[in-house]
Length: 172
Image 1 (cartoon, rainbow, N blue to C red):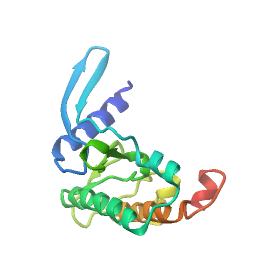
Image 2: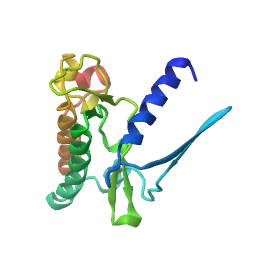
Image 3: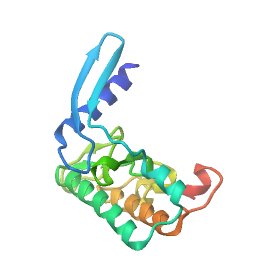
């Protein structure tokens, strides 16, 4: 890993260590070995929400409400701690089938900690889920709420709200 990648990795680890919530993947331990890092997390048997969407295509309003409620609880917890995820998408939500299909938010690599009222100006995220204010480079933690809205749209309709053959067309 480059020094920048190590800094980014350590930043993500430091954020994960502060988060203890039923809908956020729990990080128990980090082992720094000479040629690798080993992360010990809770086990989620069930895969990504993305795979569930591909398999099922559309969800009932009740199913979508249950999914979105769990994501909102986790994101509200993060926002209360000043943490902005900045890359919420079905690929970053795991399903724990052994815990009654409990959802767990993962991948805090793009996350930042902000102060109340602070605005961010660096573009992060995935094209389908990125908020317009992120593209305008003046945004707050509310960019995560936009991403949750896009996830909800996909759950209910079975397709993303914006079409395009590449990231440029999607963000346009």
